Length: 344
Image (tube, rainbow, N blue to C red):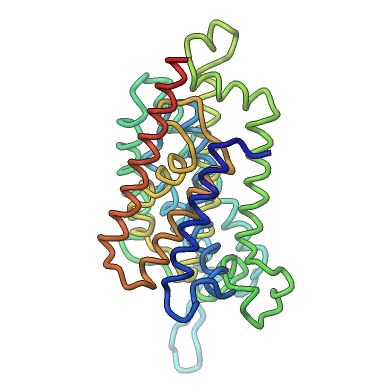
């Protein structure tokens, strides 16, 4: 059963969707192609939001998540672009031979492993710096945001990496329901199914495991949690590491979404949309509150506003203003609710 706050956000999503469904011309907003595109676009924010939800519940913040996504994209493309040598043709022209042509299934799996490992290590480093240096997460992750973005640019040599051919990894977010591809039987893109599985796993962990209870306890009151035997530092390390892992999953989706290209400047500003999705979904920046379902709803609200605004012909600044207004309203609602609970 939904709690009243989550139900309220679900109603808000329904109202926003209904507004665009009625105002966008020719009823195109609720056509299957547009609905599938809505799910595909929100998948990156929602997947990264799974880890961000845990971080915010634990009383932290991660401004580096956009750079982690970009780093994941670049590492995946770099592995897929590995050359195995050069061959000389009859006209003495030299052609580069790539491993992807010989290993079209295995090499993408290696790219996934490498990208997720780098992203998870990036999250682990965020946690280590926050816990070890005892510096506020805002400052730490602001610094690592620039470090990870710079590392992505160094790996890519400040230009896009173009793998020599498409692979199953670059088709992770391709349309299925509205296409005639062999993957149509899946109904939804593989990346969306991956998001749903990850969300179920994250939700079960937060609600039904000791680690989940510890995460909420640390965010509610770290000192009280420590007195109760909770390893606060270890818990924070875990949530930041998980944040990096889910950022890596989001990066793999972003890699497919932008056409299977390693662009080091991708995902700029994503950290704001991801944090906004968590907060709009009920996550409290004071810690101790938040839910996976709420974050999914928040990501859908942001994407619905963005897509609806585009189809209505709204300028980009107007779309950003609408999302910003909803974010302020969500934070204000959280403050009032806390204030009312303290007065009771």
